[in-house]
Image 1 (tube, rainbow, N blue to C red):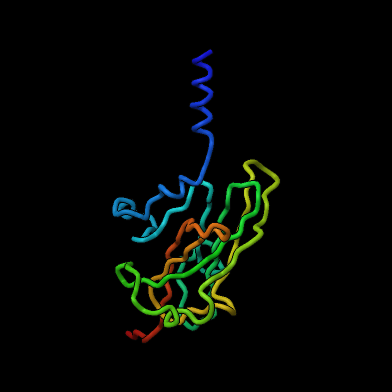
Image 2: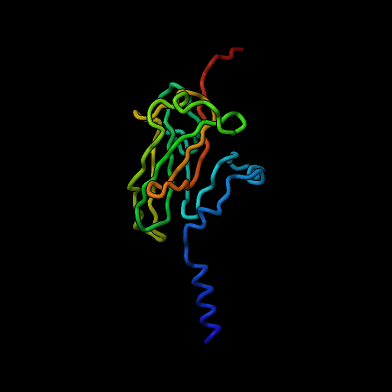
Length: 181
């Protein structure tokens, strides 16, 4: 009987989930960067409950996450959250220098408008297991415009707890000249 109780508690402890996963996740390390993934320093990897995270230039999911300054190009963020209840998320943007260190320029110098998007009510999947919600956001929009080229991190937070969940890099370029041959 003792063995069965012990086995039950061991299985129970491994099957319960809590927010400790969010506290133990690491910012991307140099070892992660060596694996050749689109990872940058200061990027926070997603918890296990977030899947299929994609950031791409609108038009084709295979487009890299690069937009050109002062053009009507948009980026699309899509992800799935494995859960049975819809969540709310807050998205912010942070400018970085060429070495992916936070830049010292004021927010008003790289963003025109609000540095925040609210994402709510994803689309539910009821056709298969596991249950999940699919979320999609497009930016820039009429409340947010990038006014400085450079490296950026898109940060996704849980709206209620303000816990940073994950971040994804993207780039804003600008055409300052033409090359001719």
